[in-house]
Image (cartoon, rainbow, N blue to C red; front, side, top):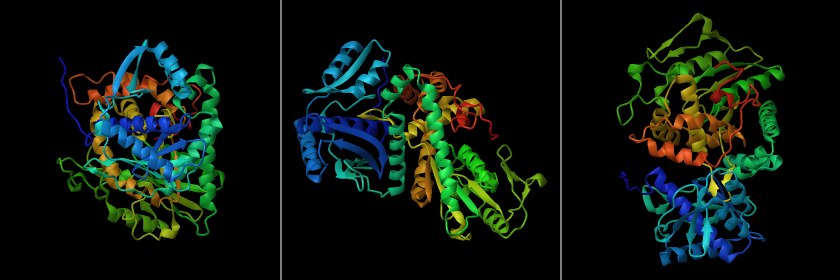
Length: 501
């Protein structure tokens, strides 16, 4: 017996099914119209997905229009989409014959005797999760050229709440810029997919991959400090924001080291110490304390202390006691900002304009940190940034808080809702972005995530999500973490950091 739940695109998995199916139809259309070309779905940006289309010529609007019309013809034809299982060796031969080297590399390290592939008419592909049963369900989408991106386009999807309408377009030039930088890093490393990385590690190249990745990231931290110091107006406060498990804390500590190299002694403050007393904390629609809200912070005290510090006064920075739900003011937490110092302020709301309405904007330097994964499983199977962060958080919760994976997964939906409301709308306010993701990190996270995910019981709502993540991790090889330095951002999650948290 099995319990079947029917879902639509209002459910996260429903939207994933829709996106995979649409990707399959676009790839099929491209293959028909431009034989020998390449379609790559890459990363989320501007409320859609950035894609590359390598057609052997400059991508034009007329090309996208032709592809859209062919996809629509597939939809109108109501063609069945079949999932066929065969021996992995035979599936590999199928994709070798179709010159899908990206899939051949991925499936060569899959490790299962049997592998499935997807079939629609003469079109074959492989996806890491389920697709719709027919082409007829894919009614709402668009493809448009992406600004300042050679051979790049934006794939737009339906609004889950209004399926006949597209999600609204949001300009995100800074976000797109950091993705382009990460793609360049991947080119430096010679790695564009998980298949590439699995192959490199099988050849014994993991140590070199880790060292170069860490060096590139440290170089970026150094560049951010140089950029801040080059500003015409001297900066006194560095704001560090980002979503859950983006690595904000370790980034702030590494930033402090680079500032010290330049002769600047930083002071660090966490927004988490400025929560209101528990009885004053706002509640969400379920009646739970809403610690994701900006208004869970004591904004009056925070602004008063920030202004006092800028005026050279001493303040006692509170320490929030989560057990008692109260702030504690301890004499040893008394600080003042000297003339040659900067204040590093870290927290999810750091880029929200309402946080510091009375502080002059010209003294602020704003940094947005996130694990913006731009590496994919293969050309048609992207890796969601949210999955990367969820696994980071799950591992950290288990390591340091004794929280089981089931609880982390259960809370993740509300965490994501808080990010959509309180963090993502303000990310383009940043002066610079920092991408904390590293090409190799999933190969390290896997060894910690798998045992945690396997503890999720079958009879709970979180089981389906745990199984989805386990199936995803099946494609990824495992490497030890011995070569990861103690100052690495990954150490914040897997342990072994030389920083104190």
